[in-house]
Amino acid sequence: FHSKSNSIREFEALSTGAGIRFGYRLTENLRHLLRYTLRQDEITDVDAASSIFIQREVGKTLVSSIGHELTYDRRNSTISTTDGYILRLSNDFAGVGGDLSYLKSKVSGAYYYSIAENWIASTRGEVGYIVGVSDDDIRINDRFFLGGDKLRGFANGGVGPRDLSTDDSLGGKEVVSGSVELTFPLGLPKQFGVSGSVFSDFGTLTGLDFEDPRIADTGSIRVSTGVGLGWQSPFGPIRIDFAIPLVEEAFDETEVVRFNFGTRF
Image (cartoon, rainbow, N blue to C red; front, side, top):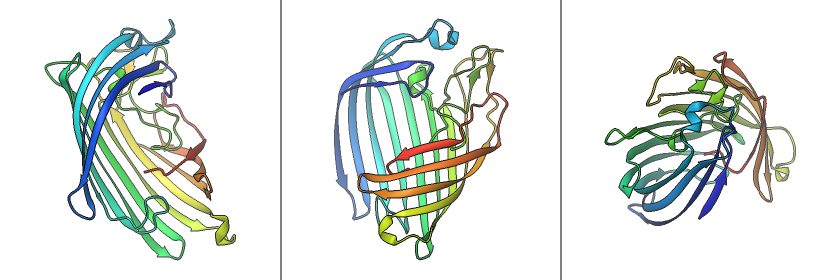
């Protein structure tokens, strides 16, 4: 693979490598995945006016990692879920060769309950943590970022540690996010596949390997609320959300309108 990403505007991340995955079912609902990845990451296209904490990470690193993912899935559908739940645990260890050593873990889950026909209550949550091994610092492209689809009402990278001198998002080592949502019909013919929703998202992101007076990192919970419109199109689920923050920090970056293509979880 070769990928280029600049979803966080402060830098561009290039990643080139290869991986192998092997998955199998332990039971009808329990699945286990094993993986190995070797990749070269590069931080580039950093503006001279960007945060010094991003500028100093410009360059290439080789990452060799092994990992696994355990998924217990009791949903009645992977796309248009109306009932059931899913739980997922993943761990990745980098340090089987390469330049970096770290352990990255995530636990996530979602639950869906049908209140009445086409009235679906749902909740989801995720906890993530990454820690360096052998005193290795966690680079910015391996940290978590929060905002966008996982915390509507806030921009991509809009929450978490930030360099106040440049207003650049730095990511974090510890993340928590969640959501509660109610999806309901809008009175249109069922074949149109259009629905409405009301929701509230919450989350926090914190933790760096260094401290500086220029960095704001409160670790406080942010909360947002909003309404959405979804369409089960022939090309897959499409939705638009309108959200406003209820609890925020002065240095956060907000976003009122969010488009999403595909299933959120």
